[in-house]
Image 1 (tube, rainbow, N blue to C red):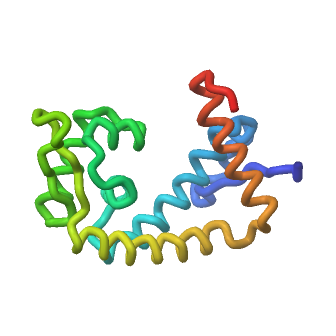
Image 2 (image 1 turned 180 degrees about the vertical axis):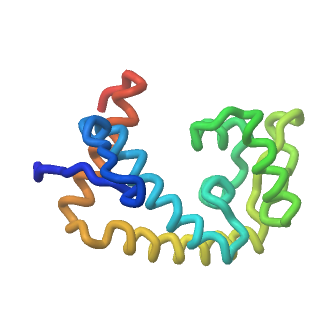
Length: 161
């Protein structure tokens, strides 16, 4: 692994070292996430979407008829936190909440035609975002990054491949 150096983002107040923090993978992950998230926010803004609303719309479009609890599980969110996202997508006419025929107490989330079309356009923009953010990695490096991140995610929950 190449040696990674500490640096300062605050040159105006003197040399500030984050060398101790740079010993931790989580610190690098957070800093990398901040860069990716900022670009993704800019990418999604023209569509009126945020990372969470885009993610929810995409999962609904890919899995028409899923329930709100299933969506929350897929996005690793608490169910109560999902309510505002679903309400926003519904209010904008991007999804429908149909009664689930198998359980009349539950709602099946369905993308509207407008929601599917917006999702397709946003997906194309997110693919360009991914190319900007990760295009400097070759195919093997990108695959290794995805494998490593997956292992961190599943390993932290005690799951094994």
